[in-house]
Length: 310
Image 1 (cartoon, rainbow, N blue to C red):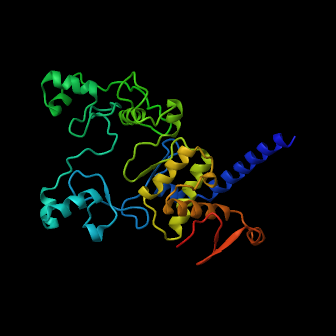
Image 2 (cartoon, rainbow, N blue to C red):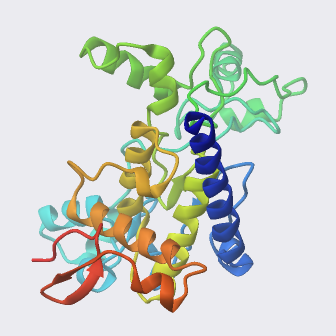
Image 3 (cartoon, rainbow, N blue to C red):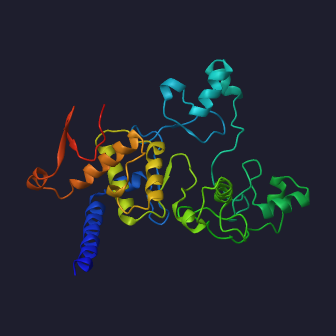
């Protein structure tokens, strides 16, 4: 009989935890992070002291600088290029251009065409790009040509965490995930393609965290944990939180408390500990707190899941 009761108790506990966490998330924070459940993305606001950075000053660069005073407003890549150039920063900015590929998902520049463009230099989907090349016209003249209209979508990539448009009808994936699968299959890292679809990470976009495909409770816990961490005055950047979300997806956990800390970085362990502590305090009373297991560290009392602080 207990085998039938325990799963129900676990489910009831999850439902209660989900309700408590959701009620504690402030609408203003959801607005700040541009949260839309249908999209499943957190957008880290630029120029926010704790969550954002500033746009890189190099023309065409879409990355973010988090060390303005040290790097003169350059992202890490552009800062490395500037350091290697050996010229003053203002001289570097006059001639610097971002010429390498960026990670994005821009749509075809034909009005309302949902298909992804080939590249930043050729901002047309493959079908429209073929038409443009056959016509012999420049892209600007091609766009003004009568009869150039939007084409139907091929559908969304079948990777659970991805919301990108497919670029071909007969492939189940967007170009980025198709390339990733090819590389990982050649290296022998994919034994089950169906399982790979549910666990592989989304394509990284600077300044955004993709929570698509994660369980409802885990999503709520991540958003609430980020809210409370921000409220405490701590800084959290997208590149710090993203690996933890990818780890949770690979481990197929339903809650932040289920993440296996083995092999995680110190920062990821600290995030798990901070998020867990904040959630555990929801609905807590002095009496319930008194009975919790704690351990004494060099800096006083801390949560039992917290990693050792050296």
